[in-house]
Each structure stands twice: as C-alpha cells, then as structure tokens.
Amino acid sequence: MGGIGKKRKREKQRPTIHPDNKYAETPPDFAHLASLYPSFRPYVNYSTHGGAARPFLDWTDFNATRELTRVLLLHNHSLRWQIPDGHLCPTVPNRSNYIHWLNDLLSSHIIPTNSVSSQQGKVRGFDIGTGANCIYPLLGASLFGWTFVGSDVTDVAIEWATRNVNSNPHIAESIEIRKVEDNEKAPCLEGFHDGGTRIDICQEVGPSLPSLPLHSNVHENKNYDGPPILLGVVRDDEKFDFCMCNPPFFESLEEAGLNPKTSCGGTSKEMVCPGGEKAFVARIIEDSVVLKHQFRWFTSMVGRKSSLKSLVSKLWEVGVTIVKTTEFVQGRTSRWGLAWSFLPPIQKPSISLLQKNMSFMLEGLPRQHGAINVLEAVKSYFSMHGLSCTLNTSAFTVDVVASKDECDSVLKNHSPVINKSINFQPTGETSNGLRLNLSSDRSSLRILVFQQIPGTLLVKGSLQDRSSPLSGVFAAIFQKLEEALRHEFCTKSA
Ligand SMILES: C[S@@+](CC[C@H](N)C(=O)[O-])C[C@H]1O[C@@H](n2cnc3c(N)ncnc32)[C@H](O)[C@@H]1O
Image 1: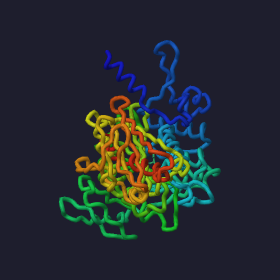
Image 2: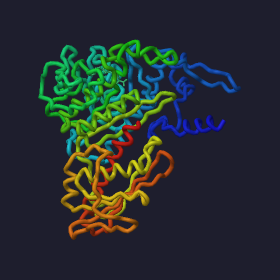
Image 3: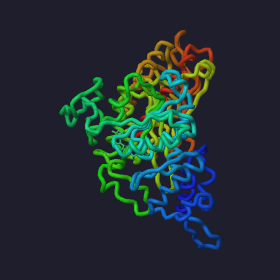
Image 4: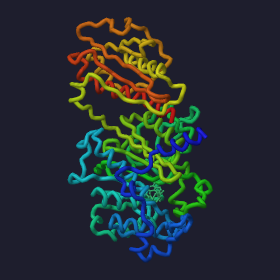
C-alpha cells in the first residue's frame, strides 16, 4: 500500500505542462470546440459512464487527431493549417511546451543577448526538419513574434510547409522555408576513432571541421550519414538566436512501429534516420562546433533518456560552456529538451563583487554519491587547477586558498574533468576556523556540502571576507565548480 501511495505521489510530482502553456490550466474542451466547428463534430464521442456525458476522441483515428490540431491552431492561435494524409500530426500542447521552454532560455540572460545580432531586434530561430506541419515556426511566430528559417529534405514537407506559411499572411513574412538537398552528403567529420582506427565518414565539403576528442564516445554509436543538417544549410552570413529540432527518433520503421493507442501519423522520412535520434543530434552537436559563433543556443528534442545521457557527455567533450536539459511530459510520454551554447555565461558583476555566500543544489543523485564524494570532487577540482585546498571530513568542508591570479587562470581554463582518485598534498590544517597559509595576496573560500534529503545535496560557498582579493571572481569560480559537479554527478547519474 505504502509503495503504491508513494508511487502515486511521485507521479503527481512529475513535471507536466509548461505553466505558460495555454493548456496548462484547462485542457482542450472537445464539446465546446465541437459546438463551434462543425467539421470537428463527427470526431467527438460521448461516454455516459458515471452519469454525466463526457466527450472523448478516438485517438487511433488519424483524421480525428488531425482535425483536433487544426481547430486548436485556429481557435487558440488564429492559425490556418493543414497536412496531407498520413503525415506526422503534431499535438499542439506538446509542441507549445518546447516553444515556451525556448522562450525561457532566451529571456534567462544566462548568455549575452547581443553577441549574435538578431534581425531588426527580432528573435530569429532555425527549425531543423520543420515537416509538412511547420508547427514550430507557426507557433513561435504567433506566440512570440519570432522569425524563422524552417528546413526540410522532402519535397512534400517543403510544399506543405510553404502552403501552411502562406495560409497565414499575418506571419508569412516571418518564416522562410528552406530545402535541404537530399542528394548531398553531410560534410565530413574527421577524427573519430573506432578501436584505434581513424574513420573518415564521408568526403569533406564546405568549411573544414575541427577534430573532436579522441575519446569521444561516438564510436559506440552509429554515425549519421544523411543529408546536411546545419552545416551546408546555414549560410556564412546568417546569425540565429537558436536552433530547434524534433529529430527523426527511430533507427528503423520497425522500431518506430505503430502505437495502437494513438494515431499521429508519420511517414518513414519523418520518423526514421540511420542511427536514430542519437546519430542525428550527435551530428547537430558536431555542426554546432563549427557554427558556434552563429547561434546563441543550439537545442533539440530527445526521445530517450539514454540518448540524452550520451549526448550530454558528448557536449562536454566538444567544449560547450553551458548545457541545459528539461523534461516534457504529456500523458505517459516523456521527451527531453537539450540546449547548449558555446558563449561565455554572463558573470553578473553585481553579484560577484558583493556576494559573499552562494549556493546551489545537486538533485537526483544516486545513493552511492554522498556528501563525501562531492567534497572529494570539489577538492580534486581545485587541486587539479593547482590551488591549495584542504578537506575536512568531519566539518564537511573544503577550504581553498588562492590568489586573484590563480583564480583568473582557473577561469581561463576549460573545466577539467574531475578525477576523484587524484592525490593531493594539503598545505594547512583547518578545523572550524581557518588556519591556512595566507600571504597578503592570497585569500580563502570555503565550500560546504550538506545532505538535504537522500539524493539532494546543498553546496554552499563562502568567502572569508567581502574585501578579499577573490571577491571579484568568486561568483564565476563558484559557477564553474557548479558546472563541473553537475557534469560529474548529475549527467552521469541521469
Ligand atoms: C519528426 S519530424 C518533425 C516534424 C516537425 N518539426 C514536428 O515537430 O512535427 C522530422 C523531420 O525532419 C526532416 N529531416 C530529416 N532529415 C533532415 C535533414 N537533414 N535536414 C532537415 N530536415 C530533415 C524529416 O523530413 C521530417 O520532416
């Protein structure tokens, strides 16, 4: 009983719909829509189970789901829309979640806004594989006034996406539909190794690509060898605030299968690519390394948690500065949003100059990752950068002593991979009070780790005093530490 109760409680706590989503409070009212739109009426059935007649749709009927999407886009977004039989039919609440999450990212000011100049001050996005439905550009333009390039490889997608754009003259100017040539191979990526053998995946075209780290885990996976995705499609002089993608999730038609409980359509071109979503998004990551100065945010939807995990590792390997993930839940289906950037995160000067204490939480840690492991990782992080630090296992603290120059060099370096087995020689003793070798240009900061609840740790950082020479870099150092710990403990435990 207790177990079931707990499970229910956990299910209730699962993230569901974005709070700004139109359907967050009130799901679509089928009876009301049927009363307004006669074409929708034939698809609404009523169950009399339990007294009151409750409207419902037959989700296995493609025409019913398509008509629902059509009337929702018309009713709630004033958008005229249609797709051909059998093509992927988007659900509006689900696709809106991605758009709202993107809006959160863009307005978060985590990275500079002016580093990639947008067209006439308007947000500009690139929708990879916009599909016949062109759903993301239509929603993004209508909800937030964004402008878009929507790309696709199939003639049918290009024809119907163009038709959907032109049916909405109020936003048509904001959306360009761009054909990706299917007969071209994506530009070659060099430098991947498979068991020590160098593999050149295809013949190189366009700008040369940097070698990726040799320990890239991509050799475990199938490589993408389809048409270009970003590189070769985005023009040299173009800049975008973001790219987005709902990739072909599956490796084969068999894997795509048919969910007998729903009928959202989807042709093989829409649903399947060799290597599946992992290969497709891995290629977006590789393209992003080359196009890092042309986009503020790169994002993609991911259909499997296992893909998310390996893609996040790949991102850190290629040297991104930020990774953000989110979970989109609709009914019983989960999808994940993955975002990354190569821009330096904004280090808020007001905070770094004034703030003496900072903290963050590490959540969802597996049992084997306790406070001591995190403390050891903190010590390892700083000592790998050459800073002297002391771990006090009874007080759950690490005291770090550094000069301003040493801190600056930490900030200039890429985050090192935390190596928990590193040997470190402490330079001083600490108990509750600090007793470290502080010369005049050196100062100390203390990191404390507390267990909040099982699986959740609070990491606190505090400067010895506000006038410390480290006060100007404290926030930035602490942010770097947070990224390194999240990378070590949160992505690997995902
Ligand atoms: C899962 S569908 C997504 C359609 C739409 N964005 C949505 O969310 O419903 C994937 C789309 O990617 C397109 N596609 C596949 N490879 C592509 C490539 N290299 N460049 C652009 N589009 C591609 C497919 O034709 C298909 O329309």
